[in-house]
Length: 420
Image (cartoon, rainbow, N blue to C red; front, side):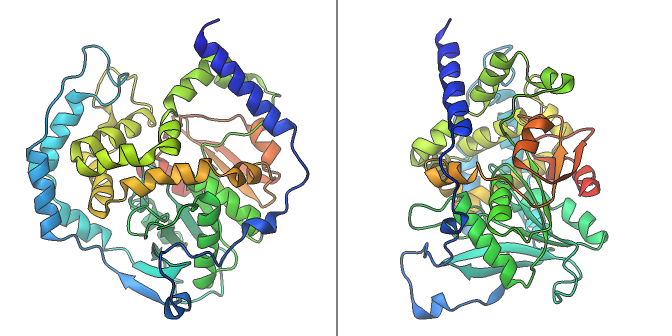
């Protein structure tokens, strides 16, 4: 038995023990703390500020000129032959993409597109929270039946939803897309401790401030974890649609066994694919400092995740990612991290969420609101339905979609909108 098998076996034993030998029932109310202040300074005026202010994305020429200078001065490298994306970012794709970014990409065009949506900011617990609020019912709360809150994850952003928002609005939905604190145009916390539970509390307050008492939530990656927590802390929610979940039940049917077995091999593959969790949740600032200073570093790190988490990493065509996302889409997502300098707080989010024992406590609480599951075939890990039923007691829909991976809203907006 090699070291990988020993480590994997130990992790499995610990995980089983953690989930099956649970302590006494958990008091959910202790997690809902809506008076914590995440900024360094607190004033009477800011505490009572509940205004909702229009916001426009406006990147200065100085920032764009600095970026262009850095893109011109990159140091190149060469990927080993026949390794595809197995060693990480492939230079045969990344270097031409950097050249395109520097010479052909037009931020102004994409800034105009981003600003075609209705953007706002409002202060919650000391932080300016950015969100899009789109739809015909923005000024009424008479009918909340088609209000959808959509939550991104890492390394995505609110931009992931730019194609699915109009599709949902055309169906009569009101769509709210916030930026997680520390991502995009939301303020980042200036104190430790803001993870998924604290974000759920902030987003519950956001929806309450907007006047919505009942609504749907869709989320992937961190978005699904936040949605889970919101459903537990605020059980009046109508439903939500998480992606990429993991739960604990060992009874599998044939199709589920085919997904998981050989189990040890699948587990090791998943552990290696999710190795960024260890780095982000232990020393996020070390990596973050490097990525915040280097556009090629930022591109290599984030785009490699888009490639691998969309089912492209083993494809013989090294640029197969462009069958799913355009160069401009990939770069625009990078730009949001670059111009806001939020790569560091976005990595810290792992440490704040994972190193916090409360996160694992609340993960063991059953979700009692109605739930719809969208199962995208190229997702990094696709838990069997029987595992999900252990946590989600009211699964109303479970649909396996024809295509799509981790970034489903950006890759397959029509499929996602139809499923919603």
